[in-house]
Amino acid sequence: DADVTQTPRNRITKTGKRIMLECSQTKGHDRMYWYRQDPGLGLRLIYYSFDVKDINKGEISDGYSVSRQAQAKFSLSLESAIPNQTALYFCATSEAGSNEQFFGPGTRLTVL
Amino acid sequence: AQSVTQPDIHITVSEGASLELRCNYSYGATPYLFWYVQSPGQGLQLLLKYFSGDTLVQGIKGFEAEFKRSQSSFNLRKPSVHWSDAAEYFCAVGARGYNKLIFGAGTRLAVHP
Image 1: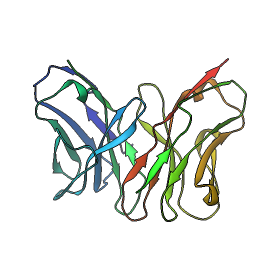
Image 2: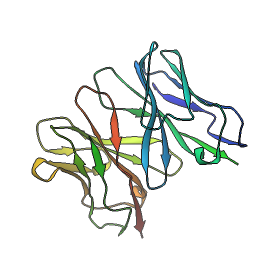
Image 3: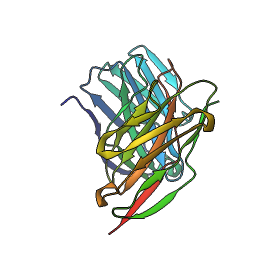
């Protein structure tokens, strides 16, 4: 089945460390997204990319950066992790022109 | 600006009882509307979506939702809840042509035997 995968699934790190979360998809979708989920806040958009050369900030991009290495890969980096970046992170994809998004299983990140 | 409100943070129902989860949105035109479910330790799975046409939409797992423009609502319903429906449910709204979604804060459903 065409799928969206995320690695790692769980990560514990310390304040100040650089962290990269990776997302790969076999759906052939052009558009990819990174969200974070916090209890009581739902999902908030961090960054999104409509194709390899197009990267856009979402509502909470401060402290994060992204790289779209290929159509199928979209990585999220925390240059210097801080405790309030502890959250569940989701990658999602969609076809061009469609609002329907397909989600990966999530990465649970804990920053101590 | 678009926004989504899910007024109920937690809901508990008995197995076999009916269920309605509320969702209200704010958007200037007819939006695209979605309900996703997140089971423990899982990603989000699409339950159903509304783009246009019939305002009562059927989804997977026996769920349905009704778009009511006059009330800016898109409530999710199920006539008889199963224990496996215990999960967190998210309503989302998208603007036509913009490929981005705004999510509500979620409603956590617990099912008592």
